[in-house]
Image (cartoon, rainbow, N blue to C red; front, side, top):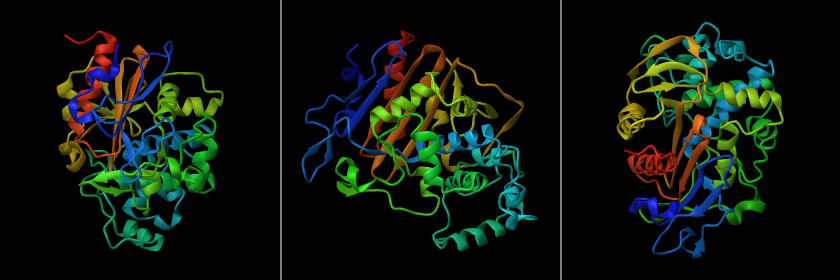
Length: 358
């Protein structure tokens, strides 16, 4: 099919589109159809290419989940461990009693979306977390939180006794051959790093506490598709990493209409557009929602639509895949398009490829 022609009109500029329709078919990674070429840098009139690096916002959290699951496979931690095992300074506090799995599923009991503006140093983070108290019992509500996933990444690095960015590169990026995926873009790749645009002005993410763990990855469409294909079951030589990737799709909590995995969110397939729009709505992102714990946790199922959204001020991303159909999609844009536009585009493309549209 001609993928470009399926895109809704909002995506016909400054968008890189990448689609993996099947492991048996070639990966497609192309700029979307547009009246003007997609532009990575307006001032320099530089077009989007296969080497263009995009900020992927909270899609970064799926990499953090993968590293945490790798650490578990390696014996460095268990997701059922409490935070205080790796940060004994929090022993006896509510945060110290939170399990890593609750950090990775946004079910700590009420961590905020962002750190308060006055928390700017590691010492201030420690003070903040020591004073933190959950609004609800842990495991009863989902509150989407950069702080929660940031803490998961930080504790994972402590468990592995290393620097988070270095551990991510060594145990996830390099083994998956993600040669153009970074937390800190090196000088040699700066020319490929797109500018995002907000109100017509160029912007990039500002380095901040928990930014590397929660929303700090920059990558190309092709690299992110390679990560999707690993999640679809493409062979991964590193046995522990292969197990970790699979384990991230374990379902821990049901939060209608979706099941919360370790960062990933899944829906029974086939899935309606309305269910995806509800599950990825601002209500789900900004408000506490009641959850039902799945006990025992639900084993990864191939018959599911698995997704994650991501945004920074100037970029928008969406990743979805269906293991049983061996298909997936990556949408990357250097503009923070409305979430429902991304969802509609991805659902249209994948269901059309699958022949599942009514």
